Image (cartoon, rainbow, N blue to C red):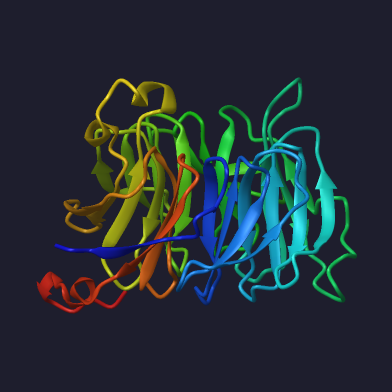
Length: 339
């Protein structure tokens, strides 16, 4: 099954490994961040670089863009959360913390931002929720979070807002996934055994009713958002860094690979530097796409399901446009499924 034609994005891209990539709601823009301290934005259809967002002074670990493509938020190893104007690259506001910002995410109404700061040097790991002031040019923000709490136990690594107000979904170093009430800071529900190792990525379905996670335990899993029950498991032979859901098709895309220090001792094939497609219902692998010269760190699917992008340890962002055969394939036979 030929899944995609590959389109190399830019000759330059990033000088160091990618940490996260994200499409905007329309899918015409792709944002990427990296260990080279820079955020890039690209036209997703032809891979042309549109611009950069410069100002961070450390690895940019995480980015998210609002549904109107007006504001971009980023979190970095320089202990800053930054708010940017998407259209002109201007930094509108900077929040400073005692430790690095490892994950950021917008709420579905664009009114709030959640971020995770890491546990380090005597500081507890924290989850903060900021109310965004969208009036005016965006520079008038409050330095103080609306809510802040310290998850007890294992460090939180990833987070996202659920469809329920004030309920945030988290993935942890221990492999746990949990739901937190941001107002009280209490853990409402958890699944301690969602994974057996660190949760490396968490991406929600369009209606936020279920989500996919990846883990260093070599599996990706689909979970029910309300109950945190594991619905499906996709088992590979390699530590996974990212997992994404394909809209309108029953596929999960996963990527990862051995750590850099172990790569030199193995062949390229053993390194498993491929994006792998799994049937999300049948739990069977249906295809692979090669392309990166090192582990895949981050995967994002175009909101319309027409293409996907991957960012690698090799510093490249690659956009893969699906061919007609992908859309003509009948993964359920003649059964038509409404996503």
